[in-house]
Image 1 (cartoon, rainbow, N blue to C red):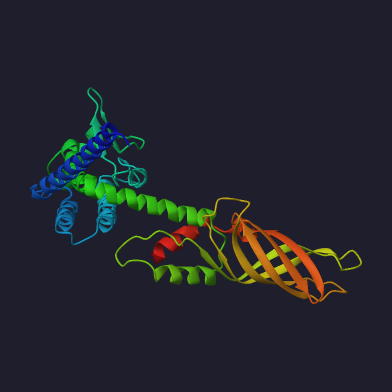
Image 2 (cartoon, rainbow, N blue to C red):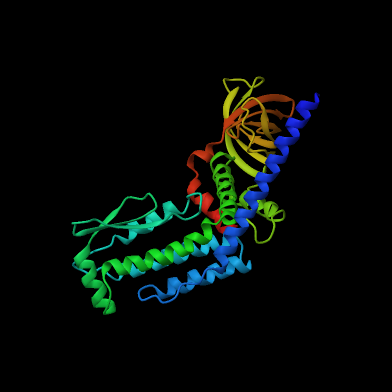
Length: 345
């Protein structure tokens, strides 16, 4: 290697190190400013939300809670605070569509900073005010009617001061999550959440006892207080399925029949995306009613791409081949399965 090339590489490496040092210093400076910022003072309309936002900022700065715990707590506090909007609704005048606001908040919570901005827009010359979270659909409310309700409930303020206070508290909480260390941690959390969704979507179907077994196996490897990616594999235990089996020595047109297959025990690497490579293997027992062939047989099955199964069986001296797809997967509620896994986490 020439001296010039060595110097060039050395210079590039030094520049990279300096950039990383500057970036880290800026991140630390931003975090320090965040933690010396004065807490929120008075709150006329959302005092509980204000206290919660202050407490979570303190927890973040003193590291009493993980960023993931703070993310969940801030989202919950923001969602609970929407009851303040609901109070302005009357039987005859539904000012705020609280369900739509809650949905916008939920959608904004998957943004890269973990929580989207709250925005309200007082349109000049209009009697309406637009309210929304992040890029959710704007919800228009009547400014005058809103002010009337605010004054009726709180004996002070206007619709604008009501929304402004919520905006300040919400964004105070949002800034906690938008700090660089929190953002990086939340990006990792979103990556893990995406992996769990893939696990639910792409993995083999699981019976309740298999779900329990895989959860217990996964739980033993997780770190307390941390979100952990899904397991890289699935254990298979007493898993039933229907197969099409061909036993060439059978007679009377009974060669090819449906058969009940029980995967006694098996193993599957659900992330394998090469369809031509086996993703798993199982020891199986099969049952089919044939007149000249023993009903029960045993064999081995190979899984491909989590959905296709091909195997070999033996009924005493009679050999068989079988094929199947993961039928349970067609009828399983993947959303419910994912929620059950989330609850266990």
